[in-house]
Length: 411
Image 1 (cartoon, rainbow, N blue to C red):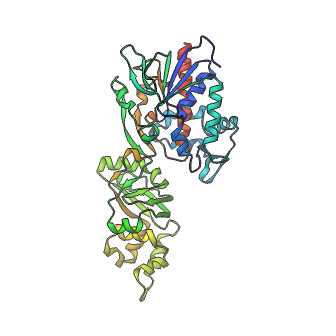
Image 2 (image 1 turned 180 degrees about the horizontal axis):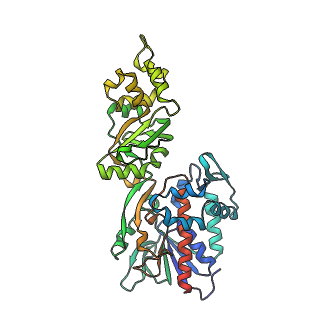
Image 3 (image 1 turned 90 degrees about the horizontal axis):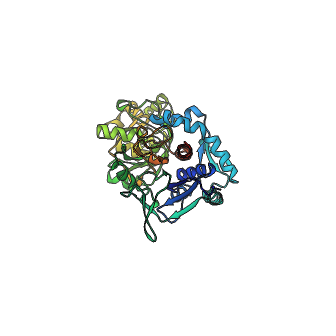
């Protein structure tokens, strides 16, 4: 519970990063007010958990940190202080047991987000945190006060410190609309343009593939960005879905950053698929070279493990003459080139890249151009694949911003 004369902090944004900042500040004795534009907190958190809340990931720390790409070194201290193990302990403190599922992903025992969020909000209220819902932040007024559009009209607030945890630019209907980017850029704060991350891609399919393949899962399959475009050469196994316009799904999301960057640089991305990741090239070539007599090519491919949507993709992306040469056909099956033309729109993405550059922040996540204002969560310029990495960094950066604000107030 905050003290009567406690320093007052406004936390803008009621997602995981903002709520973790609020919890950290309340524990430090601050009086905390959380403002959120939506009717309740954690809406994106709840929606993300509908299919089973993937809270974090249980892999070893070094590969875990590497998932954050160019920002791994910057995020590492925050993740060392509050990473997967600490997050699981924190959840247990709310009465939520967790387990390690497939691919080392960590889930609540009941797979649900709602019980965790309810327990968390109850604990925050008991700690004295006050919530102001349906309050949309619109920037600062001429006197430097925070401005909000609330249910009762305009509101101006002058806290001792502010934590911004406004999310990225995807899922606008849940509150992450990226409007804050223009507000901060207008005050001279360095913002990397928001881009779709963990997103699907458009491929310009033929009418035939749209009709036969849309909605079909492709599995098992392995994929990579073509080495000629900077891919590291390693195929990554998983699954994805053919959509009416292109491809999406976990395997595509894991490659989305490099696919997106290749499109921006070269005008397209060359996705390469191994349609039979468990079959060596030489064995496949031998099977394809076996006499097929009166069998159709479709039946011949089926005997080799290629049918359904995999056969449709092969027909779509390989030239007709490839089917006349068993060795070339085997090569196409093991490394099928799929030309991707554009990422899906940002509002269709699971998350976004870009945001407040870390170079605009000090080591405590305070804006150097706006003393007393701290930033956390997805509005910072980092990205990571799905699999618990996004949530973990939101929690960790929210805690770091809360600690930074408490330390700044105490100085």
